[in-house]
Image 1 (spheres, helix red, strand yellow):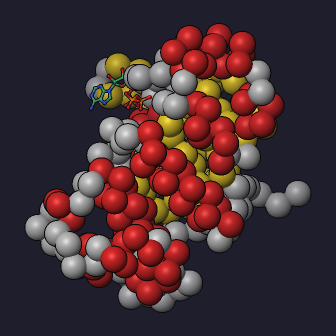
Image 2 (tube, protein in one colour):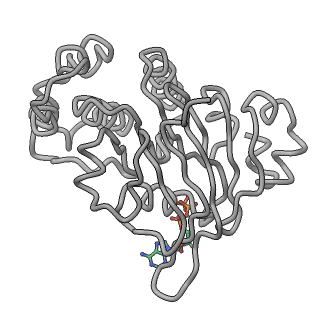
Image 3 (cartoon, helix red, strand yellow):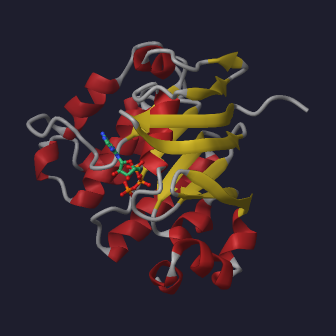
Length: 239
Ligand SMILES: Nc1ncnc2c1ncn2[C@@H]1O[C@H](COP(=O)(O)OP(=O)(O)OP(=O)(O)O)[C@@H](O)[C@H]1O
């Protein structure tokens, strides 16, 4: 069997002396959508930051596209085709939608151009001239995803896309992620809202206190509310 696109093995990451991740292992296959779930503070963002080279791990290995990228600087990892849509979206608020996309284009070519992003996300095309600081939360999330796409990633790390959005807007964002999935980009999706993420994901991992406490097919976990409740608490299961 060929190697998965991303293979994280035995990751241990600290902030200073505090151990956050404990022996985290996960994989993402080519074109696969994998949900990384867990309550506040479980270590989801830290896992992403470790993969991206932003918070290098103390131990463990990260392989991407057949090579060991453990400890490589973030810009090198980005150049290898790993895109990031950070929590809170972080964009240049005084620049327009179009200008934000232009800044992110890496000029190396690839399937994702600004024109294709506008075609797949027509809402963004309508808002091309608007300053991103004046976009709604949902529109900003779409721009954040569009911005990651124009760098032509093979793997996209998306952190809490539903955060702070109204339920109807969350539906829009998730419809868009489902569309993206069809284009073949692999996605590692961090969410607190388990049921939402499980609708689009193929497989899921659940983190608790920096450890993987569950992994398996998304559909199986989605169908087992008791298991979700045990893993992630009552509120999540009820949402
Ligand atoms: N820069 C930092 N310095 C020290 N501790 C940190 C730092 N960033 C995060 N932590 C701690 O690491 C733990 C894991 O945080 P992380 O952000 O990875 O969790 P998370 O699962 O993404 O949660 P959330 O959904 O709240 O973002 C938390 O206890 C958090 O307080």
